[in-house]
Length: 429
Image (cartoon, rainbow, N blue to C red; front, side, top):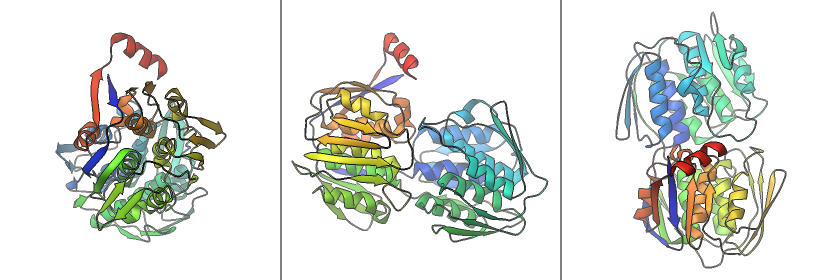
């Protein structure tokens, strides 16, 4: 097990290349199950979740070849192998195996997913969609059992806007008989990315990116080649880092439209933000203005950027308010920021940040992926050295983090935990 160390106070300058979108990759890889021939996915991020999902496809009889940022998936010999335990419990996005296997084989047994602990994130809307399509579902011994004689298109209204449910229902519905209509669907760019892959495979999908998606079922889906969109959350995280300590950073290989909610808030703080065709230039100021943010579904302010942005607000002079309407347990980073000298108080779903005091390097722990990103932002700003444990969370979502930050001038490195630190990490997990 490793820890990440950051010596703060070194300004960032230069260009950073953004990888393919994690939140697309974790849905696109299971989607390949639906094809009858080879699927090739390019521009994959170099993160642990990609390897975990490739291993899951191997468990159900597939063959995968991962080289650099390309994954070649051979689904011809896949079968409805039950996967109630093991790797399936390592990441929450393993629930996409449910929709893909149900769509392909009309049955699946999938262990309840893991991933970051962000409080209750029920999959009831996924289950509602599967049942509307004709599946019978039960929960036995910590695994979900799905079975259908036939999947029939249906009109499905999501009670809560959910990216996961929208994608999972799409995966199950593309080979169903007749038309499926998903109402109150999520609009995230990653949903469009998944729909683009499925359409390239022969699916008939209209309306992805709007709140109503129409899917006309087809009998067969074929292999194809697909390149993943840039990761807007990774891009946003580097924009926030540049806003914190940047002398002039170009965030390259992005779709600026996907980042408008963040860009507008950074400009409100008096950060220099200049958007190009596929890049965004960021330059910090010695003094930043406080702002209030509220996380919302896309195109609102992304909940995945709330935690790193909260770290940035500790630099602003004055009081800011952060409200997370998506996850009620997404303030676990606050205690760690307090260890570094931040003045933040949490009241329900809102954090009150009293910025302007310099952060100090400290020993802190990443409790989840984006909390880890927030601590990296804080470490870049802090006086002295910050030690971050729980690095495995960060590795799930940020490809080549140290190399990219070193390329911008940060002083960041890894060290192996001592036996005592490993025991402490296990106790804290």
